[in-house]
Image (cartoon, rainbow, N blue to C red; front, side, top):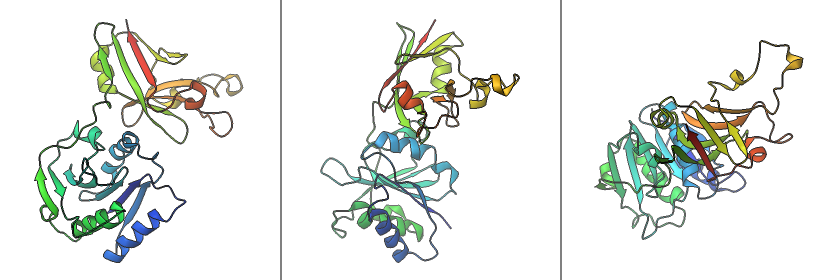
Length: 276
């Protein structure tokens, strides 16, 4: 039996998440729902894209992912159901799957056209729930709309590679709960462009000349603990998802501050890697 997941920018204060879950349970028996996140910044599709890319693959093949971020249907934005990598994604055609589709080709893209039967001002509740329930019951996605060939793409999600200046110019795409700063510079881009050359990462007034393999690699465990300078140790590494991440070892954002606040880095800020 498949799983239905929820990724939204609804937060947890209001009734929206509960209403969607209630509607799903009204449609389906013995349902498994997993909340991936309801704390996406409002309408931030790049942040949502990062969360989607790094979560969906941990669920069973056939899982259904409802993405309620910038989900309103407009004359310029349709609703889609996409089969990709054995999973189903229900979302608006706003480029939210761009991080995935640049790496994995969609198996099928259906432009949902059942809206005349489902008038709504709350797309996730009234449309996405119905489509998810249809798929969950084993229904074909071909029955809910017409096949299209292309998704809308976001063209500002990849870093700029400047051969003349030997620079990768990237951006912050996500700040996590620890205030770790995640950029759009992947390990593959870094290695392909850098070709093992010496480098310097420039993040506002902070510079990094080393990329470690893990957080703890930055700490000298071979010396006495009292002599280590762990707190405040700035770190650059490629995280589990192979995106360049800037962090501070064991920093507490609620007390001492994390990388985002201490480095002064926020969403869309520029990170430059200069190669010799």
